[in-house]
Length: 590
Image 1 (tube, rainbow, N blue to C red):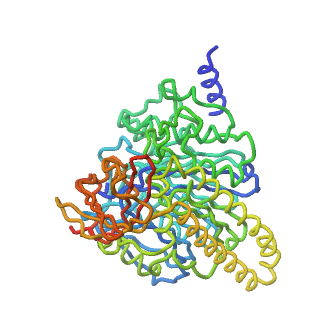
Image 2: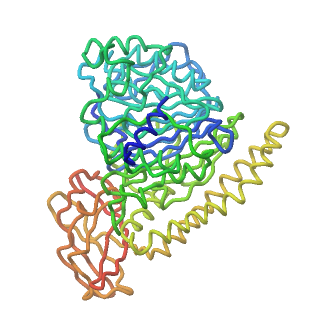
Image 3: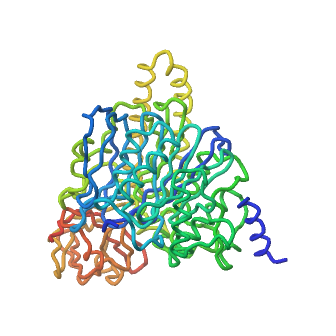
């Protein structure tokens, strides 16, 4: 019997629209409480989206509304009746600008005051080509309404079901994960009014890349009968085929076995099962089970390893000595990763821990936040939550201008590490892990003291929580500055703006760099989220008065650039092969 056959048998045993930027490559790992090394429900999530984006984190207070209050989020979607009572929220917000639809409908994560965590994943295309929508349907409003009002994960799934029943869903396919201290529910929605719901078993782990993962949907869940009947009516399923399989019935053929999803799915299972699953990628694709029993209890480090993976030491790794963030097949940690979060859900919502890594988690440490803190650390929120909500779907180009904040500082490290990958990436990653371990050693005893005080002296406990988060945020800022120096990042300055069809110029100090020793063919300029092949080529170098001026032309990245103050990066390469990373801020004119 071949190894491939053994692997197939093994898995059989285990298995007992709006026009808006979709979050294209998100990844979620859902750990039942009995599969968790901490005995708590764990959720790991990478928030990914293409193009120029920014991230903020908001704390949103409780609110009482007048009965019948309504909100319309995207201009093209339905006006929604809002809950009369809003609980407190931690809102992780992605922002972007698009001329035709200035606002992201399908990003953002939430934790609410009842202890419910909400994350989502794009599920590529469903088969649905004639969705039933009311007044444009519901999109971003679904996660917001659920976050404001759901008391449990099961409650969240039921609220979401009724919203989709009422309005219809305005995207081709999406998976929502709802988790609380006891349970995890997954709801996978089809464009229109159909969806499947399944609970993650307490002793298992579910992995969701960007395709549907539910096969045996909960037959007792609201909407199940309509789901099956509709599939029969469209010819997507016949009872003669055997048991109803949601993924097989509703996933579009072209996205059923998309390479970027299958490799991430298999490699995550490989980490959880601690066996080589490469044979599964060398045979005709068969869908993986919805959830599995891991080989070992899953701890925080396991989730970090999954969320950071580039498929190192496997046949899926194809980047060689270059950065793997742009490789094919797409990795879990990739060029579109905006932020990574690990949620440790506890009985007291104030003590829920959110470990946040800004940008690519391979270059950025996770630091621990508590839900119960009274304010956001400096550098994580550019505007208050009300202002941000009011402008979430009316973003202006200037709103996307780069700032001196925690997220942009992380982007600078990411871009420099990608440029200097062969020389510096391993060192930076080791430094990141070392920093995390030191912070966790300080955090663990403090967390134990907070647990002792939270019942009898909640005021002291909250002050301790705030102090712990602020201290880690400050430590992270110092660490990032140290990394910047270690990477030798050069600060350049723009000599021109970037205008359509025209060259642009950037100046850097010549200290330590000989202009005559530069390889002009390998001096390029672009943005952190675009592959180097899309960066602008250097057409001229001029050294004078202790400075070197570079003139650049072309570059596909410019076609979709936002007219604002952009952070751009240069790879400056010497003829010897030595590389330098340069950052500069430059105005892009529309």
